[in-house]
Image (cartoon, rainbow, N blue to C red; front, side, top):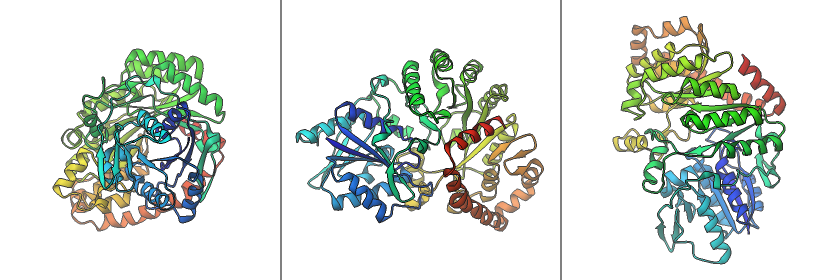
Length: 511
């Protein structure tokens, strides 16, 4: 039967909905995907004209599926509520937000998929096609006669290689572009594909939805981490490389690719170097980086790596329950710096955290100053995602008084908005945000070292933490810059040819 899948992700990679499409196609269904991609300005929602266009695509469907993150949940709700007014077609709400906040999602959709949905959505589609009841399908919450039936989750798929490759048959895909839904084009990939090679994370940090996921699936899986085999990954990448000649690199988006066993990395790197011969990027964490693993990855073509630091040692242990010491970070940084001529390194940190003290932030800044240069610093502002341990804590103690206090309606990089919302340690949080960017021996982002040192003088820090006028004056100009970036710079960059973006990315890497 005909099925329409709708993605609310801001970027049309969305491997989750593409895999759902693949398993449905494998089961014999006729599937189209519509990427309702809007900007990362989460305050924006769909216009009536955009929704009317979407309606036309959905009219001949027998089932509609939609996904969302917390940050795009208001967009998914608008789509669902609009389609329900005009169509009598079952709509299933899935994705990360449906898993962590099913109570919210069931207010809008009568069917909600909690957890991984591949087997569930095939069973749902088959039941609808055959006119069978759906109220006992595992993973589904179903509203029936004003009663909500909450079925248990099924066991996870332990052997991921059983799944078909994500659906990149773009001939049946569409995308929202400048208010119009049109055919999906290769150029919409921007010369890159985000690629997940495994599922699961053993850490379960309190700010992350993985903590909830690990709790949800206790006793429902053989192992926390599940990996695609190196052969599966390489075959998938080769298929995509052949299909899309404009690709410049692959971006492996596993929470931490370095967590893979050494033998797996050896096999993957050997096959990648022999058969793919293209740049790739990946993520790592300080616990699992080793010189041998990094040497293999760089030799195979890894040119960019992202390492999560997140907070100072005290913040990581006491607030995030991320049991990582500063010495782990510095050990990893020393290894990565050995490959600085071939490897671009980004470190991720989280700030604007109301549970941090000024001393915690100063400790983090001190740690960043000790990391060998050059590197790129990514500064993300804390978002309380519903269902996470940190969200529950903030709700319980009144840090989150109303839902907007959770900040998931903001982008991580909405610096001024986060600082104004949380109103804590504003001066030091601002400094850390201004440190974002390229870090060399002479500067942090836009700030020369002498200016950073001047701003961090203890007397100045104490005065500006107490008297906030200077901080908010600077924030005013930061907001102007962020507005220019969002309204002018980003749209201008998106309109550039893919070939130029690929070239620019290579130049940036070499620099």
